[in-house]
Length: 234
Image: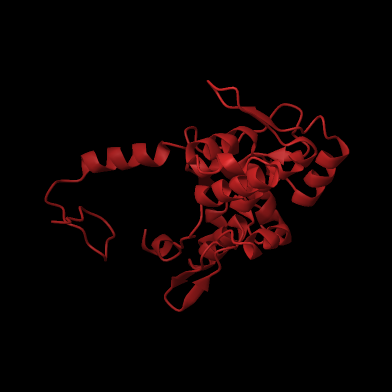
């Protein structure tokens, strides 16, 4: 537990970045009046967003075959329909920013006001907010004992709603799920890793926390040394 605990790092980003780029995409395509509706922005993100295997190649494919990759979303219970048309390649930006917000294509969005993911300070080390997920995993593993690192890469488990992306039928050559994306990023670093997604990524952490809470006695107080126990606010 302790060697692994020393490798824990945090990233200041998640679904908010995907929401932000979705809002910018809607604005660029004439749907700026819908941006204040945060729930609608999330629905659009979840409906049309895709993780690209390689962003540049995915954009080219979408531009070459506009009809295949056309992104259309009809808001349930309304007459509102969102159609990105020839800009449907932008749907790949929604997934890419979660895994690689450092890609040069996002610089124009940062310059015009979209928040750049903030850096994280851990001791004397600064973790860039725009580091790729693959690089973050590699940096985390590097903080553990050398003999342990190969074993960590044998089973990497992704959990959380931010990893719950699906690949539409016929898009397998250009789009991928979260586990495949991380595997690709780690391979680019020369690391052969086994990455998998939990069966219920959106709620698995919450379920685990509930089970853990039932096993922890009420009088087991929080300890910063153990990083366990109940932290009482009052």
